[in-house]
Image (tube, rainbow, N blue to C red; front, side, top):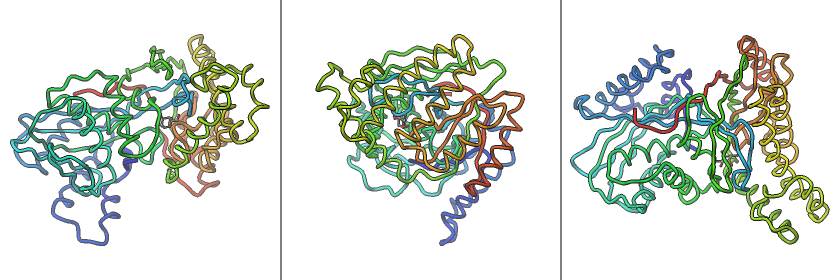
Length: 437
Ligand code: GLA
């Protein structure tokens, strides 16, 4: 997954760490100065007009020229409210785009060179539009860019020409909120904006998912790319991953809010463990299909699972299937509870989801469990759970708005005492999907 830097983290430090063996290059010095300017204005990061102007100025410092013909694209991160690890099992999931974005400022070039720099990371991505194949870039995020470009070319992009682009992101660092889907969809939207290729939002989301499968090697479901492509401010999305039908559900939480908690525990095993879980689900499905006429694991209801359970000899596979069937049911109940304003019930379902992901699906880990424990025992928290793939990354909590400062301080202290790690907290809102600003 690409590394992202949270809005309140000094990227200069990151650049310094990554380049400490060598003297910073001229370009790296420019980048760190730019970042110091951004650091002096943390509140400004929420102001897209200011950010766009500021990125234009940074772009000119790096690539030269004037602000004329600069365009800016943005794509959000996402949270998943509930429905975890069932988007590759035909389940219903309930994500929302986050009001934290990845931005790309871009300008066409006369030649066919593509040059991309990231304000928060050293190095430069280079290739030509016409080049085929990968491997010429060492950057952590180059596979995502190669994948999106080449898959969009396969889908019909035939243009020639090049461009230079600058990336900046306010997405919390370290994974769990799909910074990768933000990068994929931002780049896909940019390519579609610059070149004549007509692809629907859904096609772009599917291309981004395929880039993860074929270029990055993670057999992810469609949830992240879908949420990033279709996000709407103030709304969550109920997505049926079996049919891709979806509906928006107002994220109306009254006097409560969602707090995003970044464990800052690195997600090193996420890719391989993720694929392992997916394979285990396929084993469970094969057993279920011996007696049930189902296409996906989540087509099964709880009564059918109870009947089937004894036929699944391997206790690990049995636990995985149990999680999927019950999690799908929790999504149904959560949406009903939210629509009817029963927030406490939604909070309970969040807690149950985390416990199931911890004990049956086994994707949480000590850091996320510590965050969950500290959060869910705070008196003003209705419920909490890990969000996303797990194995580190982020968790969310449903917290009384007026108590959110106290919540963040107390949970942060308990978490640090238990793990030695410093968590980051953000009060979140549902943001808009990928677009040109
Ligand atoms: C990752 C994947 C998604 C989904 C979640 C778990 O974020 O990209 O497709 O499977 O994990 O719910």
